[in-house]
Image (cartoon, rainbow, N blue to C red):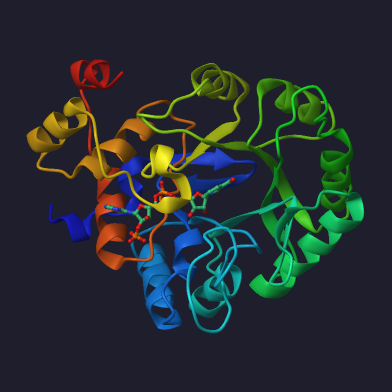
Length: 298
Ligand SMILES: NC(=O)c1ccc[n+]([C@@H]2O[C@H](COP(=O)([O-])OP(=O)(O)OC[C@H]3O[C@@H](n4cnc5c(N)ncnc54)[C@H](OP(=O)(O)O)[C@@H]3O)[C@@H](O)[C@H]2O)c1
């Protein structure tokens, strides 16, 4: 099948809380980079046309400035681009956002995780997305060993969930003890951490434990790896190159396929502002790697 005809359905589905999402999703952070918002709108619409129904975002995904600290021209918020592209929203679309940081053009991005600050961020997300509730909200924390309990912040989000502003809760940038602490307060549907074939860190055990608990594991920087905000990995291992050649795929597609092969509960959210990359990323959900290939990538 031609690459541009492969849909997100090729990667299969996962039930996030009570919502069925395709495992191939979309990360919206990069949609703010291009000063032309029409380009982002086209990419977002194409993603949904190709079957994506899980979009990751944050109110602090904004350019110029924001998490990427790039760009010129007037402010472009990913949440507002999503709204411009997709509202009225399709019934099956799940938008996952994250809180725990505030962004202000004068002060920049900073951790803001008191109950009052989280409430303000939830309201900002609702306003920019144009919704009366948020499907999934991740508490994005800064890890500080020994003094980084999530109880107060996650408890505040659990109250907003009880109030009907949030349907489901998740965590981001966390360890297993954070997951334990949060699950004692309210259900957790996903953990979103940095993870890539060449940047696994200490994530393998947490990824497996999420699977055992029925919690989705959602890697970010699966393409970027250690380059993080700087963009897609420019170098790949020999195994990635060899497997890409064997499948007539790109190394980036192999990186994405590898993450999806780590478990049925692993959801992909590759980020791009480029329509050609979007099509390649979605097609990566159709790549099937053999046990030998997976072993070579390990
Ligand atoms: N929870 C957190 O703390 C956190 C942190 C960071 C990101 N996130 C979320 O995770 C998502 C993914 O992260 P990310 O976007 O930073 O990194 P990523 O998906 O690992 O990589 C994105 C980079 O790869 C490039 N790219 C995308 N598809 C490509 C392809 N097929 N071939 C070659 N290059 C390609 C993009 O450039 P082009 O735009 O030119 O395609 C961009 O530079 C974000 O969009 C965001 O929603 C969460």
